[in-house]
Length: 479
Ligand code: TXE
Image 1 (cartoon, rainbow, N blue to C red):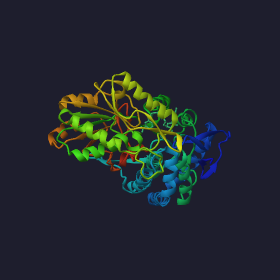
Image 2: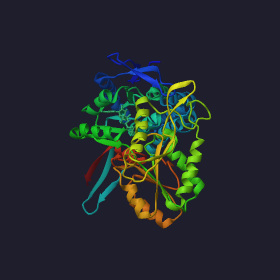
Image 3: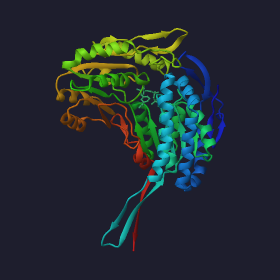
């Protein structure tokens, strides 16, 4: 099946008529093609966005909100179809796409449809000077949204929803590896009555289509989620043009387990935070530190549970872990297992590519647990972004805090403990944008979302996102 760009409310072929193959990770087969869009397609998308801007930015908030609520409802109504498309494109279990990805995409539109009705700005009376200041929060104009492959529609909509809620028009590019649900979103937006040109979706490669969005001199803000290397490149390109940037990048998040935690709860959640979505979530707790007194017990229990996590075809009901997103990605992740061995790491479980009967060319691998003796090895420092975790013991709070912070990344951290004072000390000291205590990936969409250090700049979520997608203007009136 060929998918098309969505520009000015119409599905269109790329101007050059060049196409890229789209692979199904569950069986390694090409099942469609996507536009290999050029600068010209991006320009067409920009023009459509530009001409829609005046009217959209003047559309009453309530009307914008109503349209976005309709988009949210239509996503919900198309749950089965969207979840199947997501699972086929990405390799994630169908149940996961149904339970998480698609419902969350719907929530993103609903959340920002409501949030915009509550978005307000400050005013300051300059006492004694007979003046009043207020802040106008105006939409930026045309903005670019570039998203990755791990949570395709979930992250695509997480950017688009606040952008359009705030009155901007958008040129958006989903990952070329998982374009399908973004393609289907176009049709939903049209049905919901979103005016032509408010959202334009161009498909294509990062280095050409994505690059053209970032380089476009009149696209004044870029919201990007993806790898740290790409983020650094985008920052270099955008900086001389003084674009507003929101960069959500990689993570290498610590999962710190103290002996006084609620053990069963911790164990169940740690399975999810280690291998959920095949470990392809920037928030996964891929470095597990366990207090020495329960280390051996944890190791045994963790391995025993993992043994029973079924790796299989994404559409099979009993599958817990599906296929990795692409062949190069699978190879990259498998290569890290070799690196771990060379560095003296001990593979406690997994480490191999798996062949699933009937789907022999799919990109499957075993969930993998590597015991490391030092936190400074590469597998403990570099983002692997697959079903691979490291584990090691620690003795003191100071020691584990130092190890937790001794990476270039700083996205999230999890602590398992029932000690309140320790919780208060550690949450302050951990270098991360998000700290979970006795839970993981519990999200309230009003909270700021993002990382420090190499995990990015800026925050998404709630009013932070609406602030990013608006330009504050101070108006000072003397009377
Ligand atoms: O991501 P890229 P890749 C990490 C993870 C993974 C690594 C590389 O470690 O192994 O990044 O993955 C677009 N100008 N994460 O290569 O390239 C690209 O087309 C503009 C973490 O797949 O960063 C896609 O739409 N855009 C992450 C998007 O950027 C460009 C999720 C992300 O792709 C571009 C994914 C350019 N020059 C990977 N080059 C997370 N934080 O959740 C690429 N793109």
